[in-house]
Length: 213
Image 1: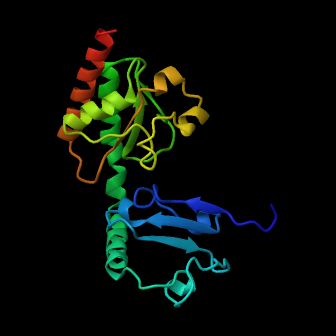
Image 2: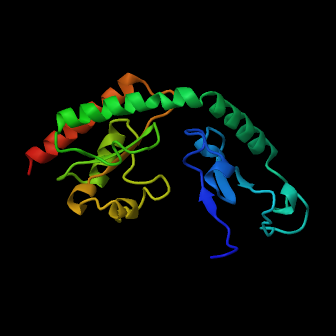
Image 3: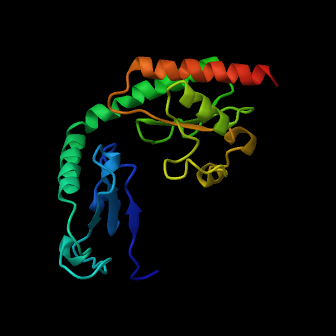
């Protein structure tokens, strides 16, 4: 609508790809420190100069008058340090795509029917989402956890839910396949042996499950 503001949730992208408020053509962009290596509970709202945001809390004039109360100074400082480090490491972070692709290739070599969602499309270098018909995501997550591997069955903000991902539904993913979906995120310090361990454990679990059918 005319005069409306365009907001972008940039939480997942920050520190992983180059983002620019003006290049995106949005009025406001949100960021969260914990996605960059800073403590949880600190974030930022980046706005165009002309955008006026009503105060969330009124009282003092902290945070440009938008949120009254004592600032989380240590959190803000940690967020700033993490953001600077992420900017320095942005190019190296992109190299994680090679490790992710190698992991996906190894998984598909073990189970040729594996579906990798978003493969061949622009996506974050460190994130993989894949599924295989006949598997159950909740069972896989628990089994991988017992093996010392942390994965999820959906987005980080809804991984505790058992309902089907609305994103995969919008991508027209077949329900009988996507019910076995896993989401894997590689970190700055993830090594080849880490991804190989994941491949080995998942392949073993998939083989055992399918053999029992």
